[in-house]
Length: 388
Image (cartoon, rainbow, N blue to C red; front, side, top):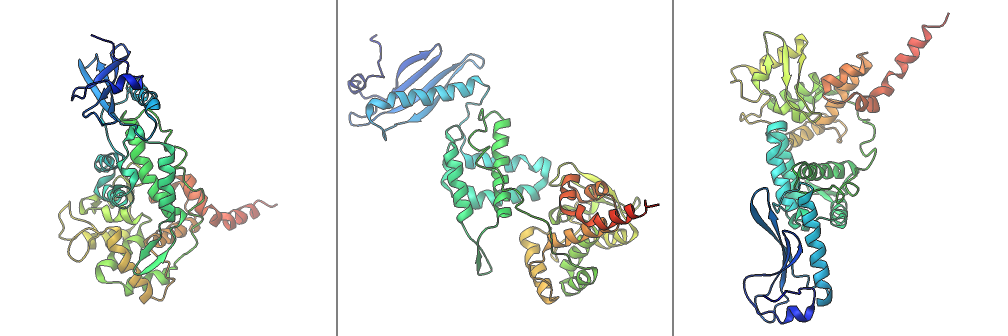
């Protein structure tokens, strides 16, 4: 059999059209293939690899490379083949997956660790920013920095419209959506579907200090007025936010079974910060949770809507905004303002930052970053007591 010389344009032009590819050996068990179905076709390239461990052949289509002159196509196909073969040799998977598929797989994966609420939040972000974006169609092993940078520019330049009002996306909003994509791609790396995070590590770096320091604080009087103005089901949710320094998503994820009346404790499942925790409750919080859990099955939402369904961020945003307006409060107030206000009260009340971090489900450095300044006066008073 004559030796196939795919690196020569003239030799490729002489090949008879057929369904089966023509192969040229690269290394032992590694072949670059060329398929020409019709005389006028530019032909398409593929790579074939003999997996000795699994005892089977694995192939991967590479494309036509018809955007470059015929004299350059062999070199480009060979380069793509070598990249894929190197990926396999480093322990990577031969499975072909797009960015969108990777994101959906990651959302399914975190159900077991982060719960359905966190997974649904991720799915919503992927539907909005990945599924219908050109980035979602790109194969993981073909993902490049320029793809991620272009996606980030599209993200940052897309305005947000809420209730007819259009505004520019904030840096913190961009960070949250980039975090969702970065998490999915890092999971892909851990699963061996790619061999490096080079494509996204630098382009997906978050904007530093995007959140800034929390400034809007609602006094106890303002919080009580907010409860008065809210609908009954939302009033209970707000009371929960005022009694517990939790993220609204963590509060919404609580079930009646998480509350132990006999022990006066609340089990909080996996939160944004990671592992779950159990906290001891004061009498007022116990009384609130007794009211919320009455006649409920252990699996029922502890704080629920009037129809019994669990709250989610798309459900609580509107009712809270309505209550904020009715109470005449700053219209930027939100569920997170309530969390900030309760944490502020804990810090100014003298509770150490480590305990505040445990209750809030976040890290001590994060609490210190946003709230340590509130202890300055207390520190000054303590220093004053040292004077002789």
